[in-house]
Amino acid sequence: MSIEETDKCRAVANAALELIAEQGFHGTPISQIAKHAGVGVGSIFRYFADKDELIHAIHARLEEKLHLALTAEIGGDLANRELFIQLVQALVRHLVGNPLVFKFLEQYLNSPYGIEKMREKFLEDADACLCSDREKPFFNLLSAGRGKTIKDLPVAMIHSLAFGPVIFLVRDILAGFVELNDDLLLQFGESGWDSIKI
Amino acid sequence: MSIEETDKCRAVANAALELIAEQGFHGTPISQIAKHAGVGVGSIFRYFADKDELIHAIHARLEEKLHLALTAEIGGDLANRELFIQLVQALVRHLVGNPLVFKFLEQYLNSPYGIEKMREKFLEDADACLCSDREKPFFNLLSAGRGKTIKDLPVAMIHSLAFGPVIFLVRDILAGFVELNDDLLLQFGESGWDSIKI
DNA sequence: TCCCGTGGAGTGAACGTTCATTCCTTAGTC
DNA sequence: GACTAAGGAATGAACGTTCACTCCACGGGA
Image (cartoon, rainbow over all chains, first blue to last red; front, top):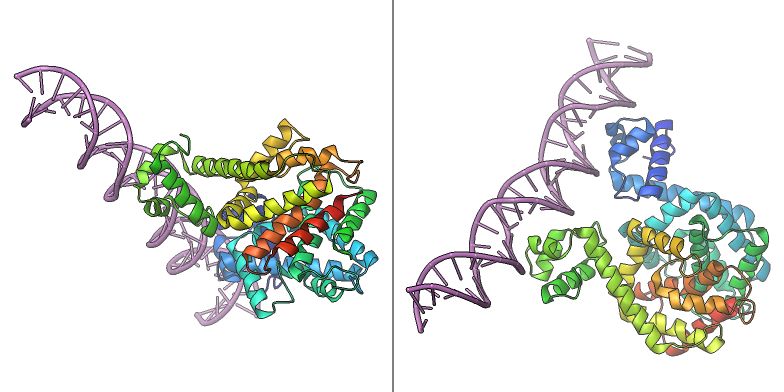
């Protein structure tokens, strides 16, 4: 069942997102999700075949929202300094502004759930996606510039250089280890570009 | 009990490392670890108070080995292009050469186990360590160069720029998405430096 | 030399708990 | 009354942990 179909469905998904982001997949029993959503345990299994399906549905929704949030702000060729920096800024802002999303996705991508998803995606289209759906559109745009404005390295390496720092930075911001401001974020974006530009 | 005290103890730790790296903490029951180690279930609880203690002990051992592997190769001021590049190369090589170590540590640091460890460390010495023990010595060396050869950004940000790409790259290499050679690794190290150098 | 007593390492069946999932009951709507 | 949605107690599987037991190495007495 689609995650958006009913109010209860959304309530379950939101409750699950909140709890899982804080406690992890194995730390949040269905019963707790049900209570937090104000719903009976049995109802959850009316909306989702099992816990896995619930988790995958949440992931799909978050990926979609993230995608929309970024494509709304960014358009054009990322093999271009200013657009790349805008992308990095938008990505950091979105993730910092939605900590639950970040925490959930981080867990998802570091779990058997995400690993499998990632591998499926990789097999079906080796050039299009590496670590997650998250960067797919940007990934293509980045690889387009290889050898022109961007170093002629394997796409996965460009990807690591571009997005590795972003994930680490967001993690540290949410942990309270860094305080971000506009100027710092700009410098961070520029630094990322420095690592991949020719 | 120390992880090195007896052969059986080591056998348990090695079995646990192998299984947990592949299946995750929650995917590997004690019973399976016992079988894989050729040991009775009860014996494990003779060596380690509980499952958590076993996991922490493995983590401690891996951190120590990693630390030794890197300090053996690297000495001097990392706020210096060549040494920084050497560090990145050594780190990637060690992690790629010991996939189980990488997979275990990645899981550990993304779990409540590691998060707590990380926070403890941070509270006890806010400047010394951020994401894990892994980079502590290098972290200090990196922060020493801030404003001289390295950009004057918060230490955590330098940290993200320096190590974020490394972790992402190793993950992609182990997943089979990139094939590494000496030249590529060198270019990768140089790219990392480009992002943090003034 | 042999035998028996002792201590402690090693074991795994059994226990209690937790959890995902089921399924029967109830409430609501037409 | 018939039908569907919702609820939550019941269920059974899986897990971490315990504990009563086995086994072996060793030492001292005969």
